[in-house]
Length: 113
Ligand code: FES
Image 1 (spheres, helix red, strand yellow):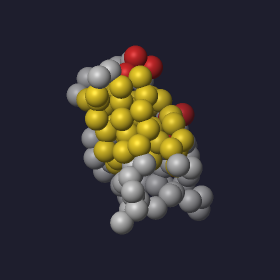
Image 2: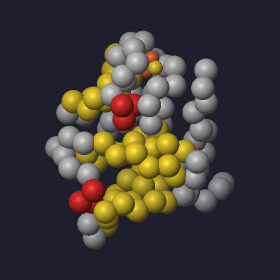
Image 3: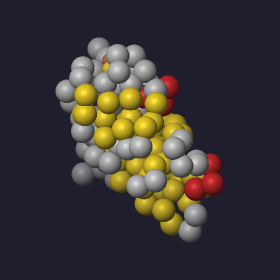
Image 4: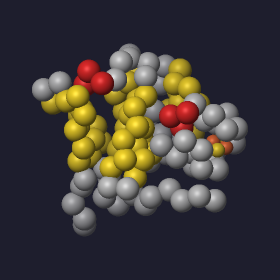
């Protein structure tokens, strides 16, 4: 198994209700801070390759800007059409006021369709 790739971000860079994008090892990751926690997911919609950080974050629901599909940021599952496939959710932890994102080494990079 390949090693996990990790990225650290100061916690102060993202306020509650906001999103932040980082490219980690060639992969776009959106970090979503909600009142329920902080989550890291692939930033590319599984429906037709839109950047989800250009959409809206409503509570734990991430809404795609292109056709309106929505995903649960806690686990990446689709909540509304037209997307049917989940987003890959990545491990995230907060250590000493820094966010650490650890990519799943087995996750494939989303490709344009
Ligand atoms: S690209 Fe996201 S819903 Fe179509």
